[in-house]
Image 1: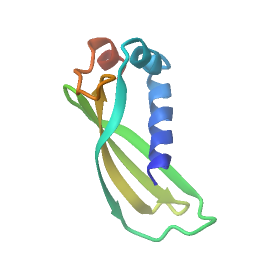
Image 2: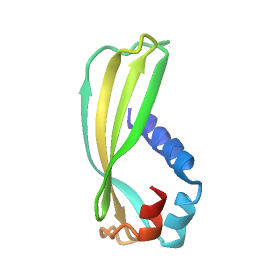
Image 3: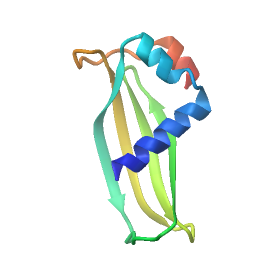
Image 4: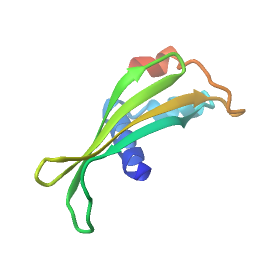
Length: 105
């Protein structure tokens, strides 16, 4: 589910720099999901121990693309998804990712 990846993105950005959210707030900007493309390879059952991984694959002018994947406890890939988020203002208009945010990433 997308909620797994949202949490992984938050943890990734915390690892990069805890000031990322503050910069978004100061600039009154928001990251919204523009696209997601997923592939499912194997069944996930209740009780399975999973590892959710995420990395920033690309930073564009107004967007970032994350590569995300889930492995089971045997290290087998069970799901992957590419998620592109766009930086927007309060009116939902795409905005250039500011250099101070770009430097953090």
